[in-house]
Structure formats: C-alpha cells, structure tokens
Image 1 (cartoon, rainbow, N blue to C red):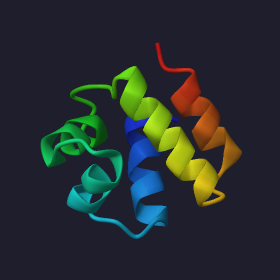
Image 2: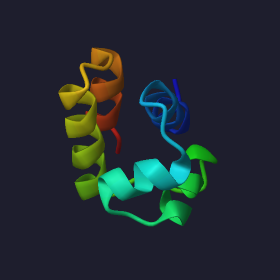
Image 3: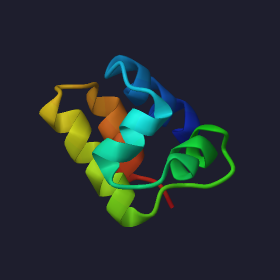
Length: 71
C-alpha cells in the first residue's frame, strides 16, 4: 500500500478532514493534501506524529509500520 493511501486511511478511520488531521499533526492543510495526492512524503517529525496518533487511537499496526519504513 502506498504511503498516500495509508495517510488517507488513517484520516478516514479517525473521521477527520484534511484540515483536522493537519491540526492534529501541527502541519498545514496543504501538507496533508500533498501527502494524500502522492505529491510529497511527510518528513520524519510528521511521520512520527502520525505513528503516535495511530498508536493512541489503536489503529492498524501495518499502517504504523508503513509510516516507520518510509525512505
């Protein structure tokens, strides 16, 4: 699964808009939009924040692993 799909799935599972996810991660809306449209990848700080958000909300382990394995 592409990282863009993982990020979108996380957002949908948490029932958040792109703006809502951006607020949770302390990034701009455009960052989330670019990640989901496969125009950019989250930086290490944003990846860590996403992984922690998944852990706090007991989301799928394979999504967390995907975030941790981005090159």
